[in-house]
Length: 127
Image (tube, one colour):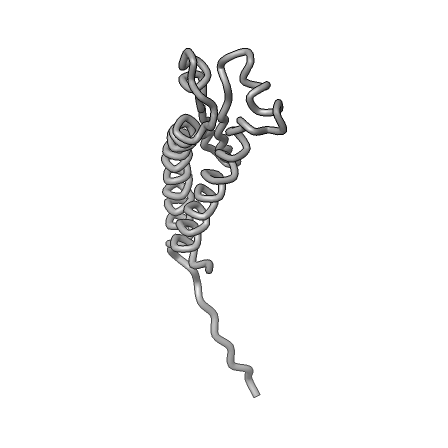
Protein backbone atom coordinates (compact mmCIF):
# COMPACT_ATOMS: atom_id res chain seq x y z
CA UNK A 1 0.00 0.00 0.00
CA UNK A 2 1.34 3.37 -0.94
CA UNK A 3 1.79 5.84 1.87
CA UNK A 4 -0.03 9.10 1.68
CA UNK A 5 1.74 12.19 2.81
CA UNK A 6 1.32 15.84 2.15
CA UNK A 7 3.77 18.65 1.99
CA UNK A 8 3.71 22.36 1.54
CA UNK A 9 6.09 25.00 0.32
CA UNK A 10 6.47 28.27 2.17
CA UNK A 11 6.63 31.00 -0.41
CA UNK A 12 6.14 34.11 1.66
CA UNK A 13 7.69 35.13 4.95
CA UNK A 14 5.30 37.58 6.59
CA UNK A 15 6.50 37.03 10.14
CA UNK A 16 10.07 38.31 9.85
CA UNK A 17 9.14 41.77 8.50
CA UNK A 18 6.47 42.13 11.17
CA UNK A 19 8.93 41.19 13.91
CA UNK A 20 11.45 43.72 12.57
CA UNK A 21 8.78 46.44 12.58
CA UNK A 22 7.71 45.48 16.11
CA UNK A 23 11.31 45.62 17.34
CA UNK A 24 11.78 48.99 15.67
CA UNK A 25 8.55 50.32 17.18
CA UNK A 26 9.51 49.02 20.63
CA UNK A 27 12.96 50.62 20.54
CA UNK A 28 11.54 53.92 19.30
CA UNK A 29 8.99 53.88 22.12
CA UNK A 30 11.71 53.07 24.66
CA UNK A 31 13.82 55.92 23.31
CA UNK A 32 10.99 58.41 23.78
CA UNK A 33 10.13 56.96 27.19
CA UNK A 34 13.76 57.33 28.28
CA UNK A 35 13.84 60.99 27.22
CA UNK A 36 10.54 61.66 29.01
CA UNK A 37 11.61 60.01 32.27
CA UNK A 38 14.96 61.77 32.22
CA UNK A 39 13.17 65.12 32.29
CA UNK A 40 10.57 63.82 34.74
CA UNK A 41 13.33 62.65 37.11
CA UNK A 42 15.08 66.01 36.99
CA UNK A 43 11.80 67.83 37.67
CA UNK A 44 10.98 65.47 40.52
CA UNK A 45 14.42 65.94 42.13
CA UNK A 46 14.23 69.73 41.91
CA UNK A 47 10.71 69.89 43.31
CA UNK A 48 11.17 67.35 46.13
CA UNK A 49 14.64 68.28 47.41
CA UNK A 50 14.24 69.02 51.14
CA UNK A 51 16.95 71.60 51.60
CA UNK A 52 16.33 75.32 51.97
CA UNK A 53 17.77 77.28 49.09
CA UNK A 54 20.27 79.97 49.95
CA UNK A 55 21.74 80.61 46.54
CA UNK A 56 19.59 78.30 44.41
CA UNK A 57 22.72 76.70 42.98
CA UNK A 58 22.15 73.22 44.43
CA UNK A 59 18.55 72.97 43.22
CA UNK A 60 19.28 74.42 39.78
CA UNK A 61 22.34 72.15 39.64
CA UNK A 62 20.23 69.01 39.81
CA UNK A 63 20.33 67.64 36.30
CA UNK A 64 19.58 64.62 34.21
CA UNK A 65 20.83 63.18 30.98
CA UNK A 66 19.90 60.14 29.01
CA UNK A 67 21.19 57.89 26.28
CA UNK A 68 19.05 55.87 23.93
CA UNK A 69 21.43 53.88 21.76
CA UNK A 70 19.45 51.90 19.22
CA UNK A 71 20.71 48.81 17.45
CA UNK A 72 20.81 45.04 17.71
CA UNK A 73 21.46 45.45 21.43
CA UNK A 74 19.80 48.72 22.36
CA UNK A 75 20.81 50.57 25.51
CA UNK A 76 18.67 53.03 27.45
CA UNK A 77 20.16 54.91 30.42
CA UNK A 78 19.11 57.83 32.58
CA UNK A 79 21.50 59.71 34.85
CA UNK A 80 20.36 62.03 37.66
CA UNK A 81 23.17 64.03 39.24
CA UNK A 82 24.37 67.16 41.02
CA UNK A 83 26.42 69.78 39.18
CA UNK A 84 27.64 71.53 42.33
CA UNK A 85 30.77 70.24 44.08
CA UNK A 86 29.00 69.90 47.43
CA UNK A 87 26.10 67.87 45.98
CA UNK A 88 27.62 64.66 47.33
CA UNK A 89 27.36 66.05 50.87
CA UNK A 90 23.67 66.77 50.41
CA UNK A 91 23.28 63.08 49.57
CA UNK A 92 25.34 61.50 52.34
CA UNK A 93 25.72 63.93 55.23
CA UNK A 94 23.34 64.30 58.18
CA UNK A 95 22.15 60.72 57.85
CA UNK A 96 20.99 61.46 54.28
CA UNK A 97 18.47 64.02 55.52
CA UNK A 98 18.80 66.05 52.29
CA UNK A 99 19.34 63.15 49.88
CA UNK A 100 17.23 63.31 46.73
CA UNK A 101 18.99 61.23 44.06
CA UNK A 102 18.05 57.77 45.41
CA UNK A 103 14.51 58.92 46.16
CA UNK A 104 14.21 60.16 42.58
CA UNK A 105 15.50 56.86 41.21
CA UNK A 106 13.11 54.88 43.41
CA UNK A 107 10.09 56.93 42.35
CA UNK A 108 10.68 57.66 38.69
CA UNK A 109 12.59 54.42 38.04
CA UNK A 110 9.67 52.36 39.26
CA UNK A 111 7.27 54.33 37.06
CA UNK A 112 9.58 54.02 34.06
CA UNK A 113 9.90 50.24 34.40
CA UNK A 114 6.13 49.85 34.84
CA UNK A 115 5.37 51.87 31.70
CA UNK A 116 8.00 49.98 29.70
CA UNK A 117 6.66 46.61 30.87
CA UNK A 118 3.07 47.61 30.09
CA UNK A 119 4.00 48.69 26.58
CA UNK A 120 6.05 45.59 25.82
CA UNK A 121 3.29 43.35 27.17
CA UNK A 122 0.72 45.05 24.94
CA UNK A 123 3.03 44.91 21.94
CA UNK A 124 4.19 41.32 22.34
CA UNK A 125 1.22 39.76 24.12
CA UNK A 126 2.71 39.32 27.58
CA UNK A 127 0.96 39.81 30.88
